[in-house]
Image 1 (cartoon, rainbow, N blue to C red):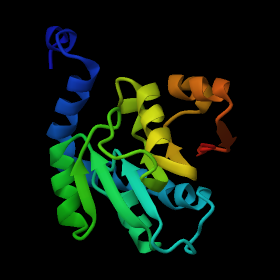
Image 2: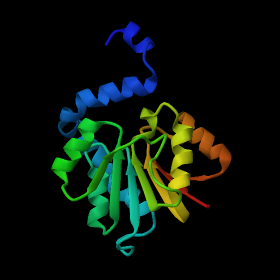
Image 3: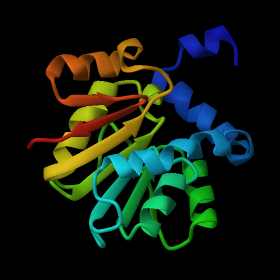
Image 4: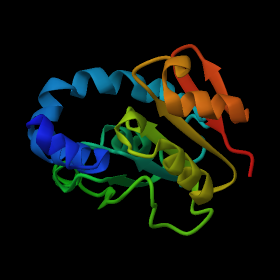
Length: 182
């Protein structure tokens, strides 16, 4: 991709085009790395395996690793990604999960639809991360929780600095947990 092409695209278009192109190789090249955070992230929701049937939305699901792990814990899972290629691959890998093409910055769900939300390494790929966080708050039920992971520490990540200033995030080691108080 040339610099001229990048300058004529929005960040969202650039990211979307990139994920559509690499979807096939993601599983082989990044899968083992991104799967390492799934169990601690789900554990951070504080529910273990006791909330059978609780509704969970996995945002930026990619090939569906978090969605599958959540389903194995008994959650009723809906998973979205803005890359149709990723969604189609996730459907092949994990049939029976409700995978949908969707935009984290404009979630197509009513207010208070989910008990829990997850996002594994997705925030840095969003053009407007603050909008995605607002959307996550909107679709989470009162008292629900949102767990996410990032590649860097919160202090080095714009969206997290904003969240930390708002007092809505709790930082634990390399895992950031957001408890939603709606």
